[in-house]
Image: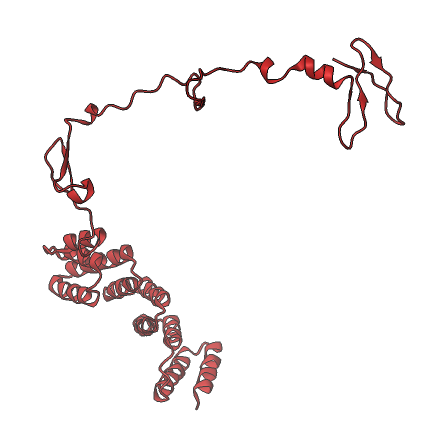
Length: 297
């Protein structure tokens, strides 16, 4: 029977709630896939686990779910693997090794918080069973699997109670490897030395002061009469006193009015006659508009 036919037959037994027969057909499908070199589908193991749980075979169900989780993890589907491990712990919370598997899948995702939670649960439950030595071996192996992850090494040092270089390594990683952090130089108080290459001479330039309070800010200029406005500078010829022109020197209002006369003509505009002071000109009436009188200033 081919792989597809085995799956179809297994589903038919599922519909009749014949859990044992369906589980056996799914196992045959797994063997057929492995023989064909395709590899077993994790979903088949997951299905076997679900059917075994319905049949009341919790141990068989957890074993099938574990196999499915391992295969999902190998394929890079870590979320599926994590979900299956959660299903195992809901059915059988005493399966301590599942916490180690969960920590491994979360470590693949670099989620240190969840790694800490499950590694701590694994260590504590193993300690209650009197298997601290076995837990220590497993945690050492876990650390070797993720040896390049400095933050995890700090966590393992804490869980195992060992004095490692994890804290220093983590601080080095945060500050930048290769000495790329800040460098502080101790100099004599009150003196700042400028190298010769910057000072422009053969000997270093030394600036001395006792405190920051000794460096007084420049006195504010009192030449500006208004805050927020920049002062202007008048440039006059040599020997000539600066003078401020009066408004009458700029525009001769009376002479200009006499020269122009009562009529002003601009290019493109008709001449407009200015009315005598106190007299009003009769405006032309326009349809739809009220007549208004214009009074010359």
